[in-house]
Image (cartoon, rainbow, N blue to C red; front, side, top):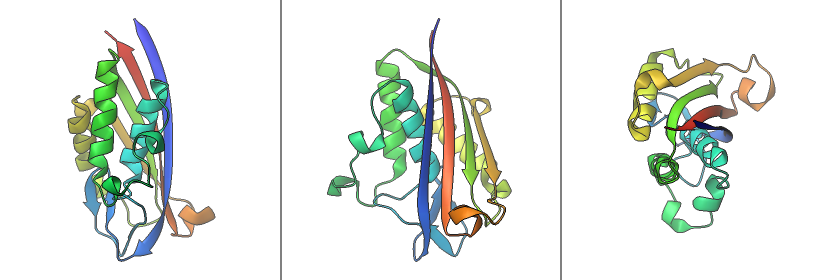
Length: 159
């Protein structure tokens, strides 16, 4: 069996007047992610992790922020395409381990929905998707409540 590991990370500034979408789930918050698309840091990080595992570049190579087609686009589209490329290359997802870094609000009430949404896009069982939430402990842009960041590691395998 052949295995590939990928790592992805993303960070977005938090601003008033935008929705906070994480893992395809809208989070109740006074601040949202600033970005060209819907700025979903988790779906961006998982997309990059899959593309990285396949050595196919990053999200910007496939969905450049200079292309108006992707303005305000749902990041669901990006992850869905990365999953299609994964299958086209003969791979399946073994698992994804993800961490969201956000000072507030608390994400625990949303984690199960986030896991289920990511699993649905990747056409896998929810048990294959781990999502953890961490605060910034008052340190850096995340800890000061100015940004949200996500990290993702994926294991791909050829059956």
